[in-house]
Length: 538
Image (cartoon, rainbow, N blue to C red; front, side, top):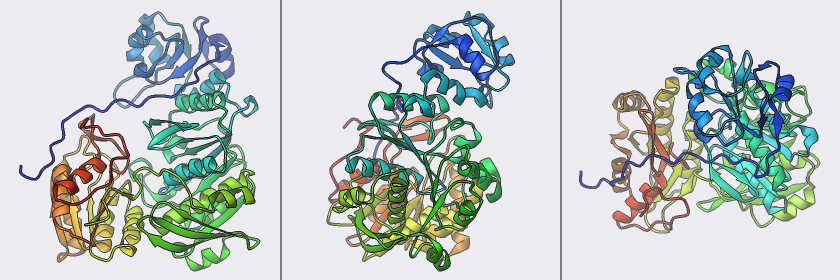
């Protein structure tokens, strides 16, 4: 079709798991004593993984019952790749009996995975690990974590990070897999950081990380809370269940102290119910005025431009820190303010932070309102936002720095929370002048039916609003660029930093940033030079 950018179907390269370069060893019998269970024989093990394809010689292969298959079905492949033993349940032991590997049999392999990984990699608090800074919430946790890594580095701290976008160890960066890594990967990361003399490790922690035991055994030095809004009802069903999935992080057995944003109502409840020391923070213009007044730390936006957002952070004693975050939006100032207070709570000195950040925050926040257009023509931003709340904040931020019209381009995840789709369309229409609805990750759901649900919601919200349904997204971005001109802006929400689309169980290489850049160039507009990996090879 004319005007469509052709993108080849290339399978996405699986993410790399960072491990310690000089692993320690552990005896399987000793591991059995530590976590409970029975070992069929002894063996020397040096690592642990739940993936037979990511297995290194000497690993314990953890075979867990999945939705459709048992991991023990891959025991032969694990043995061929050098596995030293298998950790599984009784069912898995029967399935893997022909592998020839020693087995450690427990009732709940996933439930003991973190304890096993901690024992193998020696990553308990007494083992000289970095400061552990966690951020949880619905929106903003990825940004806070990237900002923390950037700000810590800026003040001279050797830092690491784990987010939905990437894993970072003292400047070494690899693409991430899961938002919160499996316990086996998390402890391997901590061990790698200890080797590289990382002083502070910032981690994005999802609700699923808590309920699926990925962060068991970890005690965070500081836990930050951003907000809680409609998301993940496919996993948790309702807001109360979703809240209860995150609430355990604010107990003394999980964290030592907390910084809680009052920008959303659940923040007050988190602060009240936590049994650890809590300091609160709120942002003028986002938090309710009474919540802002009660917060100990206060964030105020002082300037907004396409290049970033200036803000002032005021301490309980009246001291002020003024700086700029290199992303647009009051919500990004809120994220940076939360990160700064987390650094202070972790023990870093006010003067050191204030001096280091005085010239602005130097941080890479991939795929968060990322500008890909040049100085002339329409502004085009690619963003990871995929919730109604994220749409609302991002569109409002873009509106404030856009003299012309705002176009919203978005799709919805397949096989994920369908209850938020109506509100996604509603907030998209309320914040834009033109809306283009396209595909995102259809997974095993019919892409046309996802688009239809979004379009029907849009028609119900405002029948007169200009709405275009365009598929595939390669055509949608071309259409979007054709509908705007100088002074206008496009927000392409959903793909953000991601370098793939999930279609019928296969992850295909794909970059919305590169597609947007090419659409601009083909239309005769300027675009920024690439500053990200290009999956197309051109």
